[in-house]
Every structure is written in structure tokens, then in C-alpha cells.
Amino acid sequence: MAGTNDAVHWRTELGGGTSVALIQAGSFRSDAGTLLGPVPWILWRSWAEGELDENRRLLQALNCLLIETPAGRVLVETGIGERMDAKNTTMRGYSGTPVVPAMRTAGFDPATVDVVAMSHLHFDHAGGLLLADGTRAFPRARIVAQRAEWEIALGDNARVVASYDQPELRLVADWGAQGWAEGDRELLPGVSVIRTGGHSAGHQAILVRGTGPGARSLAFFGDLCMRPWSANPRWVTAFDDFPLDSVTVKGELFRRAVEDDWLVALSHESRMPVGTLVPDRDRFRFEGL
Ligand SMILES: [Zn+2]
Image (cartoon, rainbow, N blue to C red; front, side):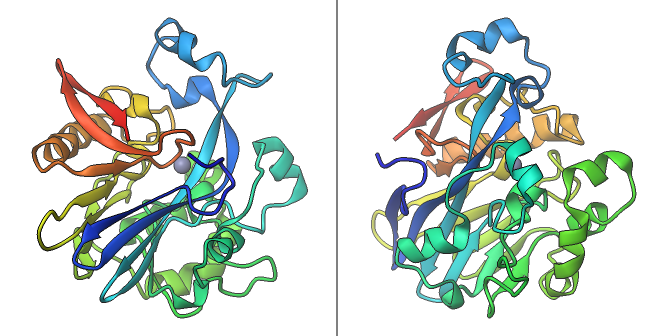
């Protein structure tokens, strides 16, 4: 498998002319204890130790999906983008190729994207909507996030202010309002968003369904399923604003993923970002492809 910053990390046909390519838009570092939330260190130290940096941070890939369907192109997530200042770039350990140059290297013209769907609006998912010069990175696209997510993202709760880059979001708020989703919605035939909440007030999952003989579906559960360990519904991050909702909705969605044999793409996994969920006692296990 290609390295983190190579253009197309993984690609598959789902049937009926629908395909999904996974593009990694760089990576950043995030505190391991915060990511593992309520899970004691002794349960994860053995596999995490090789990945931790000197500040006990894990490597978080910025996974984006480029979905091609007969009805149009959908980009899922935009990563951190090109506008983070030097101080934050160093502080966050952000490196690699932002989404637009990564797409170009992979042979995708950002101007052909019809819809940009984001699981939520934290800085590491909504940072790539604008180019370095402040112009729209996806000039003809409709942006789809939940209305509730926009409302909380631009609110004044002190915790929220730390998770969202509000000055940047204000620059795209009008653009975003044109594509507000309220609950579940089909974006294009075969591509839907499912409101989940949990990680953030208006967090959503994205589901892609192929058609015809041998058709498959692929689910992107956003930061409800960022790394393989997330397959345990009880393992939620300390970033989750509504952890009880996360546990419930993860259990429900993961059961559907097993029953309907969905492929699952992880939001922040670099080494095996696509796989399936397998029931494992009272939880699930992620098996990379
Ligand atoms: Zn994230």
C-alpha cells in the first residue's frame, strides 16, 4: 500500500459506475489519551507505543474520499487545508499534501466536484474549503453538513471554540448554508448522509451504495470510527461532545454495517484505512482489507 502522502491510497468499484478513491490529505498529531477517551492506558499502550511521538501523540491521517457516480462527483472531507498558520502547523504536527494538490496529483480536478460532504466541521475536516488565497477550493460544489453542526460550530461555548476554527468557518458560512442538511438526506443517487450526532452535535455519516450485480456499499462514519480501535462502540474519544449518543449510534450503525456487508473507510487511519466490521463478543472488530 502506498505511503501517507501518495495521491490515491486505495480505490474500488462499488458497481453501476460508482467508484470510491481514498485520498490522504496529509496528517497531524493528536494527544493519545484524548483520542482513547475513557480507555485505560494499559489496554492500548502495547500497540500505540510505536506510534507515539515525544509528546505522546498519535499520527492521524486526514482521509478524504472522492466518490464518482454517474450523477456526479462527491468529495467527503477536506482535511486541514492550506490556510493553517505556521504556529498551529507546528503545534499540530501537520504535514503532507493538502487536499487540492493531493487530488490534482491523483488526477482529479477540484473544479469538477459537485458536492463536498463533511462529517462535521472540526478544523481537521473543514479546513480545506478555501485555497491559501481565500478563494473557493471547489468552485461549483454544494457543501453539505448538518444545519445543527453549523449552528454549534459558530456558537460561543468555550469548548466548541477550541474545536472549530471559527474565523475560517465564518468565511464559508454563507456557502455552507446553501447546502445545509437537516437529518438524513440523499445527496446524489446512491450517496446519502445519515445524521449521527455523538462526536459533535451535528455529526453525520456518509453512505455510498453501488448498484447492479455484485454491488457493494461503503460507509464513512467520520470521527465515530477514526481508527481500528473505534470498532468498539464504548471506545469513544474525549473529543466526543455527546459520548452516550456516540456509543448508541455506533452500535446501531456498526450492526447495519455487518448485516449489509458494508465496506468501512476510517477517518484518521493511515495504514489500513478501509476494511469491514466483524462482530466480536459484545462489540465489533475492524479488519483491514
Ligand atoms: Zn477528526
